[in-house]
Image 1 (cartoon, one colour):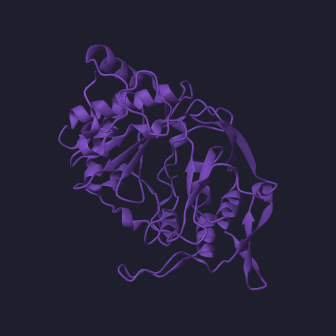
Image 2 (cartoon, rainbow, N blue to C red):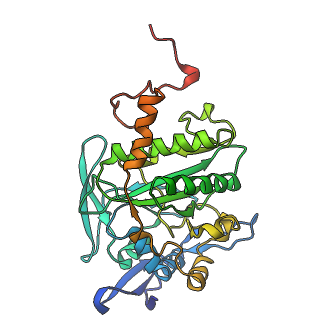
Image 3 (cartoon, rainbow, N blue to C red):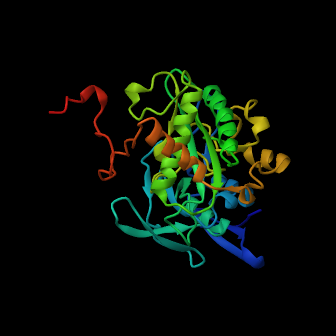
Amino acid sequence: MADRLALMASSATVLQVPGPDGVVRDVRISNPDRAIWPATDDIGSTEITKLELAEYTVAVADAMMRALGDRPVTLQRFPEGIAGEEFFSKNPPRGVPEWARSVMCTYPSARSHPQLVIDEIATAVWAVQMNTVTFHPWPVRSADNDNPDELRIDLDPQPGTGFADAVRAAYALKDLLAEIGLTGWVKTSGNRGVHVYARILPTHEFLDVRRGVIGIARELERRMPDEVTTAWWKEERGQKVFVDFNQANRDRTIASAYSPRPLPDAPVSMPVSWEQLGEVSARDFTVRTVPGILAAQGDAWVGMAEAVGDVGRALALWEADVHERGLGEMPFPPDYPKMPGEPRRVQPSRRRPSP
């Protein structure tokens, strides 16, 4: 646990944060009383300060590092708290401490630049000092930025559906993953959705992994046609849970496990066991409740690193859809270059017939 060292001219606090090999890092937190989450009368919550966020980060250090460690990370930052301006830092912010490192990452545009790698919790605390609320790690390790070692599936409830609908889809997805040799691990998104992860061997690059996710998503849609959709365009989704296959793209990230979200009451994206999933609410897990829950119950994702599968059978689902059902590529995000085989990137209601 971090210790508060001293007040510096009443405008900063120094946290002493445990580091590797018994080292203690001094991390300066300026404006410690800044309200990152303001008080909200409607849900009766009090404000949560920058210092409280830093102390939360230390309290969940071991579990958070299992999710963040050795991965390039994008920082979602709020200089004036969640009610103010936000931006995503891909380049490491200025003033990176000497114990931190970065790694070069290549983006869909083919440009490359460095991204921060969090090797110890003191780096995450320093990121909080830089007003980071949510950590967005890439699904790769720093030594190989092109081949993902995590398959991530975002179950996103559309209007008219909610968390309970995403939970039902998650249980069906768990069974489907098991059938193709993958072990599913689940967490709340911190909002209305559910995230399902599976560790994979880093044998395939992003586009292959994305196609594996599309194959899984289409099979889940066939099994739950009234509840699940793979439709990229919102106007076609209806009141269903959207399987967001494009989260598997290069430079697309999901909020880390144990990462707070910039929403009222400071919810946390929280790993849970499959046995717990049907009994919890996403709002059970906040910056103030998670340290105690974690201390009492442990990390639900312990063992994930050893449960590594092969993405090959997911890719086989894709291949079957292509060759047996005539299904092809799906739309890419709007900031991507036009990709080979991609359908027209035009909203269906605005399409004109091809000449």
